[in-house]
Amino acid sequence: MALKLGDLPNELLIKIFHRNRLSNDDMCTVARTCKHFSKVVIPLIYSNVKVKRRANDERTFGLIQSITDNPSRAELILKLSFSWSNNGTTFREDQERIVQFLLRRTTRLQILKLKVITMSQYAMPFPVVSGVFLDVNPMTSLRRVEVAYVNITWETMGKFLLLPQMSAVFFTPMDQDPDRIDEHLPQRPADRQSRIEYLAIEGHPKSVQHVHELLRWSDNLRALLFDFGSYTTLNINGPSTLQKFLAPISQTLFFLDLQGCHTDDFHCATVDFSNFPVLKTLGISQSLLFPTFFEQDGEYSVEPYTRNGLYLRLPKKLEDLTVFFDFGSAILDHQYHTIRHNFVNEEYDWIEELAIFKPDFLPNLKRVRFTEHSDANRESHDVMQLRPWSTPKAVKTLFETRDINLKVLIRSYSVLRNGLSDANGAENVVNFSQRRLLELEV
Image (cartoon, rainbow, N blue to C red; front, side, top):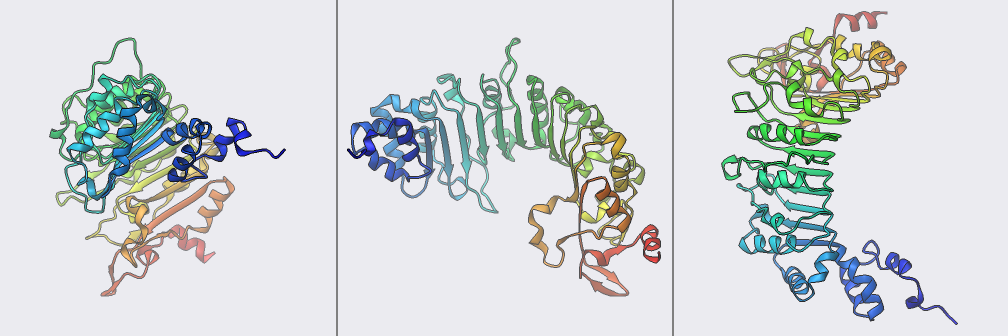
């Protein structure tokens, strides 16, 4: 007798009817076929719910009605995603009610995503989602939260981090109008630590003191991505140095990505990453790594001695190093100036040191990359694109011998050469070092 589809065990039916194979509409059709299939498919349909605000909200209203008629179905939702189009203009009062309705009932939720779909010129301010649902739903299973271009309050953020299963929070970016967001974290019980392992926050300078406090809540934070903005220690109760900011997590961190602007008040360069025993990946802005000296017109320079000896300040277990520069040309020339000194006087001793001293100080180093903050959009300036530095033969050989992948990207800006404008490529603005010229002669 031929085996029928309905005779298969539920474990196989779950694989057959999974959303990776069937669309949501097809799964709903299968659920209406018979009671057996309905019992198998309905948990699959509700396990991953996406609420999208578009022109037609029939699906959302159908979801709300379904849960109203069958409250137990809310417990089937394990992953819940909200997205609003048109820069958040579709987020209206009814959307806040929908968010609260679902989040109050999804007691077994594991992953939550809130996102406004933005364009290059996104509207301000961003929508604010209240955290009152946490007063009703303890969310004991929630382990991951992703919030993009949607505001939640600092109190809600703190409550998320204190949830018993929470391990990852990604929050970017914070509203540019901080007065719209409360400035108070919840009171943390003395006997409760956060179990957060991954934290990513792109905020504004006013958020530094709150993030610093959140770092003190966790005894096992393994990865941090944070943007300081133009932070200064004039911010009340904030840490005065980068070393102090990172101190609570220095012993557990294995991945660190720090962006932002240096100021004279925030002495970032005093940080010594050699005190981070398990740090393997470091991405950091130049101005958070090297002392920067500001001039009246806002330009700056970095003294060469602050670059030399960088290997002494890096963690011994480091495998991957990326430093972002405001101008790629400043990687090779510490005095690079877009107006008064727009040729690059090549100097690379400090880069070479990373390979020379690898055996004793950085035995695990595998990748080194120096580039611009604009690396993500290389094609944005036509001829002024980021291009690989033509690495001197001796340096290239040294890094290859040490088994380190070196990548240096610089950008060509239009400069005057012999009275004529020259914007033909990055190499055209580089004045080769004497070491390279001697190498060529040989």
